Image (cartoon, rainbow, N blue to C red; front, side, top):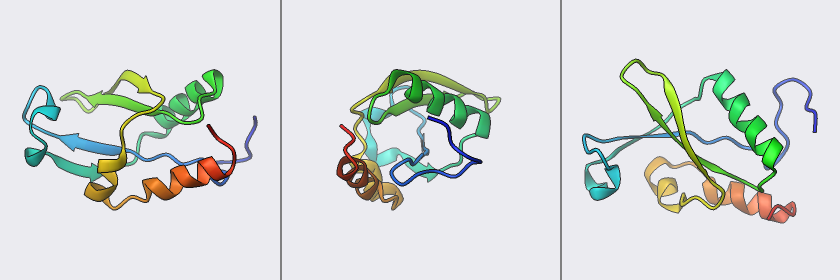
Length: 107
């Protein structure tokens, strides 16, 4: 599928949320986490989108980490990643985006 310019079709959204914690495993204590909505570097977003385009899951939740130099590192892709709790923390309309995807026939 080719796209013109950087325009996205309805249902094609990228949401990037940074979770900061002093814990090695941030899942140990959700009460001490800090959430921020971020923009991914364009090259990284394009690479992740290309990955999804190649393997064709309906959606994907990528786990990334950022090192002390600010470089991103890919950890894994969760085709059914947990995201519902992030909507409350960030105000992003994640449920609406997934509903749109389902309405368009994504599975």
